[in-house]
Length: 142
Image (tube, rainbow, N blue to C red; front, side, top):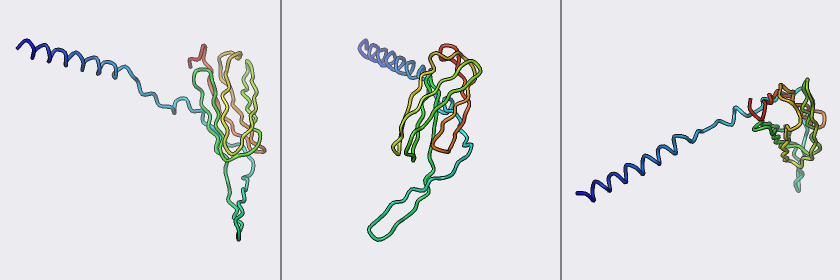
């Protein structure tokens, strides 16, 4: 009898620890860190692929995504070849960076050195410009 009660008590305590640890783990949606980008202008690029007997032209649109997480802006570019210019511009400061993209590229830009506030993010790919707004909070908080 004592063994059964001890076993049930041990199982109850184990399950209480498991449920309490999973209750604290919050599932955070990445969409709250995503910076909404809009395209300002430019033309679409045409990538051509040649085969043995025929040539096909495919219109390729560059895909650009940007995230702001803990004082670091990360930028992902796909379907583009060339230099990507990144500008972070605000009333209280600015930052500029560039990186080379070979069909796919990624860059992480720390926001250290610029004060908290609202900033405009501008990503230039050739003659196409993508813009968005980001808020930098004090010590990485929004």
